[in-house]
Image 1 (cartoon, helix red, strand yellow):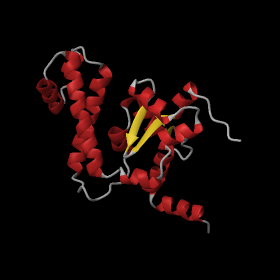
Image 2 (image 1 turned 120 degrees about the vertical axis):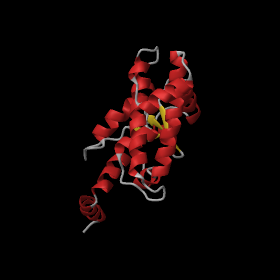
Image 3 (image 1 turned 45 degrees about the vertical axis):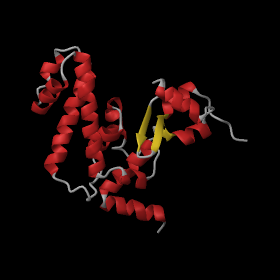
Length: 200
């Protein structure tokens, strides 16, 4: 039996590994990398940090205090916020993240015990909100295609330097996300902006 066949049999017994494989393929990363950054304490810390950022952003957009936004979020009273001038997608993300955080807290997962990969929590921790639906849909199928590429690989395969990629991302002309120590870019955006290098 080949290594691939053995792995296929194993993923049928352990379906969370199959999902982990699809998520790794979606991000263009190794399964080990995805499992390493799927640690509950890492996910929780990143979600808490994003909630704090959103509260500050929404307070600025709506001209209200951070305490007011935090209080409404804690009570789940987001309808008050929609009457303000904050961007609806920021309020929707805050609402969703708050629910995810409550779910994680109620599960009482010890920080040292790796959790089965839950794409909702993983996406909430690592992905921009606009890509959550895509990620969850694509990683639910075995035919999942890679959507992201590491910055170093992008510079090798497209006619662009890492310096330019960094500058484009900083200027918000190019999406960049970081999973652990790896910066990723959207392949579709790279294809629109840059030509592929041709190997001899």
